[in-house]
Figure 1 (cartoon, helix red, strand yellow):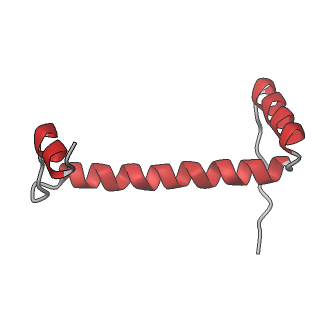
Figure 2 (tube, one colour):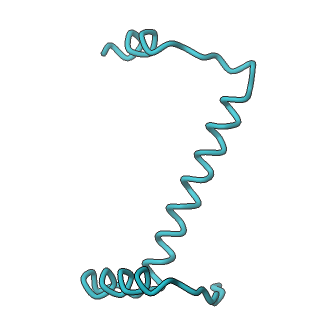
Figure 3 (tube, one colour):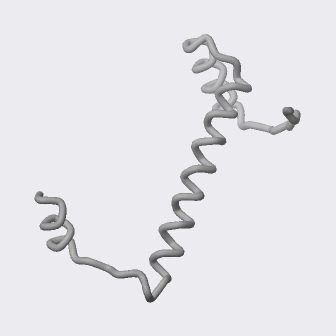
Length: 72
């Protein structure tokens, strides 16, 4: 199932989207969907990182410890 959503874009962003769509032979809807999926994944990752950062029970290691653990 899909839902139609209307969005207003500034002219420069709409032109850039149209250019990428033409160059990749993909629809603007496809590109917007992929961009939104990537953005939402990044936001979810950021929230996990922030939650871990704020969790006092989560161990924090130094850069040197990380390098040693990864043999870098």
